[in-house]
Image 1 (cartoon, helix red, strand yellow):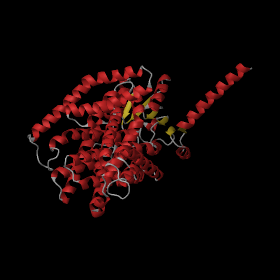
Image 2 (cartoon, rainbow, N blue to C red):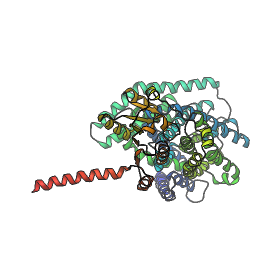
Image 3 (cartoon, rainbow, N blue to C red):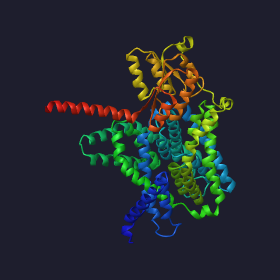
Image 4 (spheres, one colour):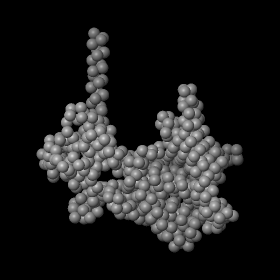
Length: 564
């Protein structure tokens, strides 16, 4: 193989093996990311056979980081974060500090320097947003309150990591021994770095949010998809490169804020769709390049250290989240969901480890431990999610134990506290489905009480003059506060099947004769709920099919009449 074809060989072999191992991982119900990492191990210098060009792979991986962070910025929503900010921000920061502290103790026990131990600890404290999204989608809880809370938690971690990527180069001079200071005093170097980052943010918020959407808008008017796709890539790579060259910040930070700025425009969805194919391809190369840095011999030489890292990620990190969630007065179900979400590491851990390695802070074996921890934790993460329902059911069968940890936060409006309604509707959930139902009830002047876990929705409903109660309907006391005992109908619009069952159980205890209508996503769950005795279990796809079929028959009848 000549030097001229090195890039082609790297792309062909790297992407080919990533595809093969990604399919194998998918067959075993694992995220394809596991297969990509394995593909990198296969072509690494530490395994026999073909050895990819590590320098070239690192450059391609840098492009992957740029596009990956640009995609994260495109999907970053301040509104989604604001809806769960009371839990996600303090919870994520407390959990990240505790996890990083424990992760720092471990390598210090191995004899590492403080610099390497801190980078290693922080890398282990960061869960993967990509892996979480996949898990939430598979469980069908991405649009639930618990899903949004888990995602918001990880977004806070991502933002904290982005900040760390900015300040880390100022803490240790590139090329110097770990733990030594640069030529400038540390506080001066740190101040200059933060100042440059703030200058970059000011440019992006003042100039970028006007110029970048304007450019994409004018390109979109040309009706050329090729030019629009090219413009999106120019924005992502150009801003990342300019940020690094002019302001000294990382490529990742520049690309992230380019995505955040574009996200505010009406073209963000089209930009995300056009950038997605290249983003996915180069992100695969990024994970392959990370796998190339994995030295299996380091794990074989130190199996106990690998097991300690695995235990810290999969057991200790999730357990740390549970008391934090209880202190924030969140229900058991939410605590278990968030804790399961945190039992893995991924892309940001790799990015931070790669930076620590390039700065001479992190020892080479640290990268291998992190990759091994990612491979094992991602593989076992689905088992953590599988334990949520059994543990929740076990706790609900022990009311005294549940009462010690599950202290519901309820905000009852004064109108409900002073007078008990009668023959009303209790509407659990006020999202897209619940909002449409509420509009219909309003049009018929039918009384109803909304029970909702999103504080912003509760406030908006109350501003319109309707009655809304803030709380989790699956928790003891919340339905009682909504006076379900005197209600005529209970409507449950939340998509979480276990929460639906729990709400039904509590409602039947308070009002055995109440009529119920619930939302479900599977035919099996629909049959179970109908056997449970609900008035009606609505399967979304089934109702959609019936509605479309009815319209098709009407349309065909019209055409038949015209033809005759």
